[in-house]
Image (cartoon, rainbow, N blue to C red; front, side, top):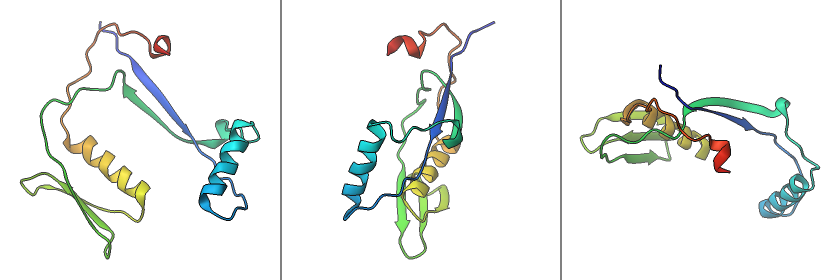
Amino acid sequence: MKKYNVEVVETLSRVVEVEATTYEEAENKVDEMYHNQDIVLDYNDLESQDLKPYPSRELSESFNINIDFDKNTQDVFIGNEDGSGARYNCKNYDDLISAIKTYCDLYVNCLEPKGEKIKNKDMER
């Protein structure tokens, strides 16, 4: 039987409201609060959990991705040079990143993970 390394990735997230004159100032205040441990994220802040092969799978072939965004309809078309692809509705940057990830998961071919002993990621840190 082969051994596989599966990476568990958790994303913790919390919205922090602060008073500031600019967004940059607000971000700096939150960054300082975070580094001073006034903000400590825990299991209650779990936003998502993902499992993925480690190390990341290799791409199996060359490809070209085209991305077209229509501001009026908020539609994004992601496809290749032959015109095939998928359409997504993207209201903001996070929607766009999610659409690109979804497209890649569905349409970009990768090699299967190798069943072999791989050095633990914790040992690399």
